[in-house]
Image (cartoon, rainbow, N blue to C red; front, side):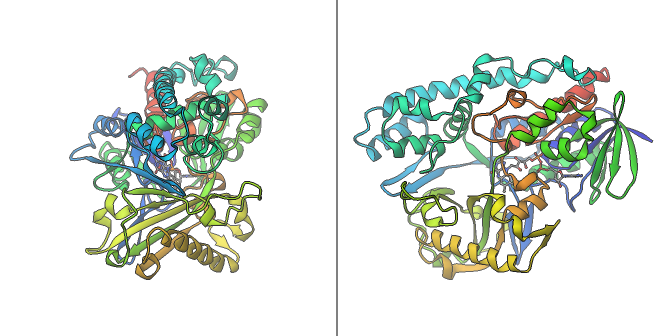
Amino acid sequence: MTYDVIVIGAGLGGLGAAARLARAGRSVLILEAGPHSGGTSHVFHRSGFGFPMGPLSCSHPRRVRAFLKSIEADQGLTFRRNHFQVTAPGLDIIISHPFHRLGDDLAAAFPDEKGIQGLMTDLSALTARAARALDRGRGAQRGAGPDEKPESRPPVSTDPWMSQAARIPCEGWLRKRIGHPGLVNLIGSMSSDPPHMSLLNLGVMWNLMSRVGIWTPSEGIQSLGERMASAFLRAGGEIRISTGAEKILIGPDGVEGVRTGGGETLRSRWVISNVDYKTTFLDLVESARIPKGFRQAVADVPYTGSELCVYLGVDPARVDWNRMRSVHLLYQSRIPDPSRKPDPLNFSARQIEICRWSDNAPGLTPPGMASLVLRVGLPYRLFSEFRTGFRKRVPEYRARKAELAGTLIRAAEEILPGLESAVRVREAATPLTYADWGRRRLGSIAGWTWGAKPRDELTGPLLVATPVPRLLCAGIYAASDLFLGGVPTALHTAEAAAGMVAAKNGTS
Ligand SMILES: Cc1cc2nc3c(=O)[nH]c(=O)nc-3n(C[C@H](O)[C@H](O)[C@H](O)COP(=O)(O)OP(=O)(O)OC[C@H]3O[C@@H](n4cnc5c(N)ncnc54)[C@H](O)[C@@H]3O)c2cc1C
């Protein structure tokens, strides 16, 4: 049998595209390497607690609901807003409030800084500019012909401002408006780290934080994938779990199918890859089948980094919660000495994120208990020596992971007194875990780098159409910037990919 479409990966991007196409009458097969659908938007269980393997919350709930409605999977879906608090020496504010309120709070925290109200006005204008540009640019690849030769692909961006802003670091823009280095860092990176984002991402990120908001589905983030998988199966789709794709088969005219890790050859007219972009083009596709310059750009442009994450089931009565005023707390106990080389493992001088996950997922927490997720950004390279293969580690890894988890808990104890003694269940994930769970290169968390893009080929925003005829990508790596935030970007790319297949087959 030849399928109309094989989708590789059952993350939200893959499930979304597959559900849309199955409902439009296409024969669709999903191959999922892992043991469940939902990809990283899934939960795992320990001693009665359910913990998130990836997303804690998402932006643009209306878009998410509209997507689910389009596949009749939105019944009873509601969202609640999450707020974000930043606590650091001399600073304790909620950063997810509207700009006028944020400006007042920053003015109180930085009384000598005169540029704050002007910055808020300009930041507000920047977020609106970024949102408008992205709204126009999002469709940029809609007309791209995946059946066409690579050379005939249209330019990826329709908005010159957006392409430029994706390549400009935001630091200069901030320094023109404000002088206090701590404030430049706070606005440019939401921590005491120097600003690292591009100007485009600065606008995108503050648009999500301050205007759109970050929300969580009331049934928990895993419900999105569960709803999509059910819709896909109801529409007659077929899914093979624990069946990885090893090669995307490409002939002279484009995609021909997929070879699985078990050596089976499956034929299809289209392939939609929900696997991260680098893995798709550097591993699954033969290098001779793609233009050299494109392959080099895929290899050169970095992804976002990874993290250490500690999952805790706690007895809430033993913790002093007084200083934690919102579901998400970005906490830093000390500002690092700028004259010394930064130490990524000194968690007291790093910003750590503390999420009271049980507020978002009460149904995944035993009665009378609470759960927390502690996160700190760490690069994969600090752990690579421990990895010997897929899910394989040297024996020393376990102790190292436990030691780092303990250090992170102690850093959080500074703002949540009593935490250590309140812990009843404890689990940890490192960049190695994330590299295995989502099978993402180097355990990357949040798509392509949020910094200024060094090359034109991958500014976009959409990377759904590819140089290989009838090979499309869907998921967060199918957009050069997470312009809507992770989950809605995955759904948007799914919609775009399904739209391209439908358009070429004569339906809309
Ligand atoms: C720790 C962490 C925290 C995050 N936090 C947030 C957050 O708070 N908010 C947010 O919006 N987003 C967050 N994200 C991003 C989040 O993963 C995405 O927004 C969302 O889950 C969509 O993912 P996706 O469709 O791109 O694919 P993924 O979830 O990555 O799914 C890809 C799927 O492809 C499968 N696969 C890979 N290789 C193969 C192969 N060869 N053959 C078959 N199958 C394969 C994988 O097993 C996986 O199931 C986070 C991610 C991580 C890892």
